[in-house]
Figure 1 (cartoon, one colour):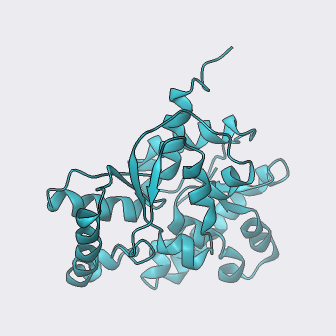
Figure 2: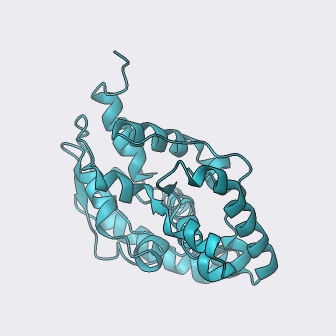
Figure 3: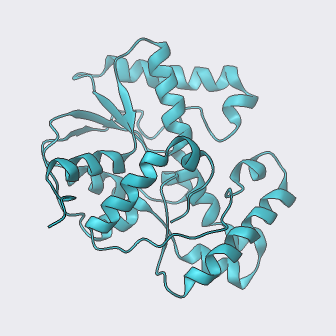
Length: 243
């Protein structure tokens, strides 16, 4: 499992949910030491040398586990897009082999069904991260994860496939435009009928951006990674109780 930096620091609970839900669906999760940031933010900022150095470090760190692992799983859409591009970034066969194994967690879970869990009677709006739907071309898998949760009512609002304004470091470099883009999404969420209890999205930048926008607008809508909801469903169903 790729840990990353923002995910490992601010969203370690999503890593825990990722491990549990993958294990519940028949995967064995291998921990890899020595990995680093994916380098996406460096690449976005034009610091190609740092991005390449981080990519080489990750390729090297995962090389020992590569013989035992079928996939490299990632739960951050931005990181996943970068990892899948390592072959192009480095132009090396070992990097291409690394990139070929990278899968978003929703892809691996959807491949196994995933197995259904306990009921969560909630209204949830799914928001598609740009780096997942456009860069990785992953569309159906996150919805398959959410559909495995009984009684979860998932809505795709008209703007669900539009950018939230986070876009890596864009929100810091162009804060006014980023906020204008975010305001459109927050307004749509606030006007939705029924109003969702949660927004589900699979990228840390989107989770923070949308979450901040909702809080600033005073809207009582939470944010969650899709795998968090599946994890909660599995916990409620007793799938994690050891025999």
